[in-house]
Length: 142
Image (tube, rainbow, N blue to C red):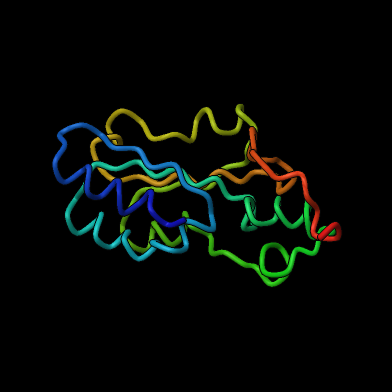
């Protein structure tokens, strides 16, 4: 968690092409301060944050193995409006719903793709990360 944005920075420093980072909201919080680095170095990075307002992979584990006790993943979890944070760093951004028709006109234009942009895509917390490998033992079976 938290590797996509710093990795994109490293790639953008040695690449002349646009770099794209796709990250969840939980992972983005680990490296959100790197927006300053992206802006100050004027890097050509497009960041797409899939925001399901939870630590999705951990919540999925909690649902399957811990009787849906979403402590620290949904309960007690919060995230900023990433688009607003990006704008505060001077990075063009948009926050959109998850439906394709809503997203269609919000993605960066060709001209905007020459500089840093951030698109925060709000998705329902019920969507799963699939395929997911898992064990066959439940916590209660131990």
